[in-house]
Each structure stands twice: as structure tokens, then as C-alpha cells.
Image (cartoon, rainbow, N blue to C red; front, side, top):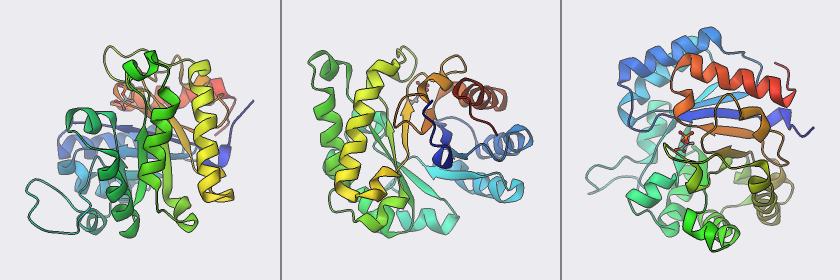
Length: 263
Ligand code: PEP
């Protein structure tokens, strides 16, 4: 059974949900119920909840990275509505989520934008969680692997091997995420995860072999553990199903029970 126990990562992107007070409570309540030795968790709330999330992380000592949902590549300037990497690190944020399908699709982020953002985040000392994934149309035309490869190669172009420990990659087929999404099957995911690993190893050598690769898209307590049995998948990126403490815990329990992993 495939499990890379040392790098299991599991967490949620809250999207445009929760006030600061709600996120603070969410993390404190999670800290009361989640197993501490299961792996590394992450919570990615809206910008307005980041300070409260960092406080709750520090107070609870939960092994949780707090992530921002986006950032600009410039350190400062005339970019109304944007946030820089330095502003995030000054708050105590651990990670930048970059390239989520909603940012690419709804807000027209390009691979070249993401290349600049990855470089800026790493230069500022932030971890990067890079989302990649093909659309339903690309899948229907059998170019899913090409899309994922292009997104990964452009976003990581120019990143050196010594920065690999700060990288995480989430494979999120666009057709599988959100309301109306269909969860991918292990057979859908396995060839893509293997291809992603191949690209990471060819760019970073041994360091590329250790970069966590997460699956995301309609993960719930009935299927979480199944995804962790796919070779090269070492974590889960969860949306709707993990937005309450009982929901988050149910995913962790499922991942633990179905994958055979012990906490
Ligand atoms: C997502 O939107 O990235 C996601 C994983 O959502 P869900 O789990 O709700 O499909």
C-alpha cells in the first residue's frame, strides 16, 4: 500500500467563506479534535481572516500551515486590491496558494503570471502550494497531460533545486472540483501523478522526489483514503467537505482508516 508517511499533507481552501472570528474559532475547534501526529495540516482562509488564523495557529500549536489564496508578484506599488508576499510573511503566513482553477478561470491568471508569483513567494520565504489541472474540454480532447505539464513547467521554470523543499503541488482536475464536480478515480489520477513526479524529478533531482503531490476535487469522507493509495499522491486538498470541524475530522479519519495510516 502506497503511503509516504513523512510528507502527508491535508488541508482546505476556504475560498470566499468565513469572517475572521469564524476562522479563528474554526482553527481552535479543529485543534481540540485533530490528531497531532497524523501529518501536516493547512488552512487557506480569505485575506481578512489571515491574522486571526495565525493567532489561532500559535495559540493552539496545531501543526497547521496558514496560507493565503493569492498574492501579487511585485513587493509593493500601484496595484489596487493586491497583496504582496512581504505583507503575508509580516503577518506570519506560511504559504501562498497559487494557480487555483478559480483564479485561472474566473480571474484570468496566466502561466506566466504564476511563474512570477512562484518566484516572488519563494524569494520572500513563503511555501508555495501550486494548483494545476486540466479542464473538462482538455480532458475530452485527450490533452490533459499536456496541460498539466505545461502549467507545471512554466510555473516552476527558473526555480532552483535548493528551493524544492518549499514547494507543494496540488493536482486538481477542473472537472472534479466544486459543486457539480465529479470526483476523479484512482485510474484518472495515477498517470497524471506519475507524470508530475517525473517532471519534478527531472527538474529538481532527488528533491523533486520529495515534493508533496496532493489530489483535490470532491474529496469527502467516503473517498479520501482511496486517493492516498494512488502512487505519488501524498496529500489531499479539500474544499467543501472540510469547512466545518466535524467535516475536516471526518476526512482525516477516513484518510487514516482507508489508507492504513496510523496517527
Ligand atoms: C477546490 O475547489 O479546489 C476543491 C478541492 O473543492 P471541492 O473539494 O469542494 O471539490
